[in-house]
Image (cartoon, rainbow over the protein chains, first blue to last red):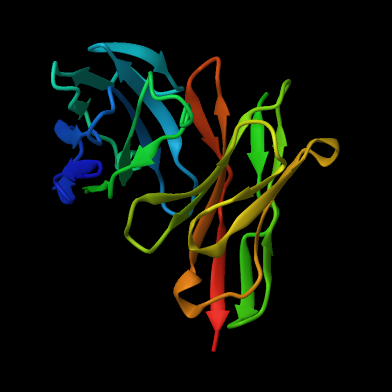
Length: 116
Length: 113
């Protein structure tokens, strides 16, 4: 049973560019959340997707956008990159219906984004 | 505002010694609580979770955590630490209204031989 997968593993961009990160959820999961983890800090919630719609959003600017596909996979897009966007971007999946594991989010390995 | 606090930034223990990592939360109601572990350059692995019921929960890798409502705490424990336990540990709470995890700032565990 494959867990949460993310691509690419590493990415280097320059300021002002745009980037797209991808996530495939754990089998049986239908909800995808994205988090940003700056160096030395805990992850910060960006947004969550369910039924192909953004269901919740954290305190991140509109430069951060996303998408969820019918197969539940998801993309995170960041426009007009800033130096401060350099971080580990984590995708987490969860199930909206599985009893007994409600709320448990399972994380992928992350994508390390470096903005120069 | 809802928050999770991990008072210890860095802890060093000897291999075979016991371990306790502290976590305090500030929520209006009892949140769902979690402990995750992160090895360098890796994602987060779920160690254990608390939703309700028994206040002592068992997790993977020999870890356990105890929920204490009176102290707003959810401390992680292990009776005997192994060198492979060296990693960053994060306590998190689920804001059920927002469906988003709120994380503490993490505790880095170093294990001495």
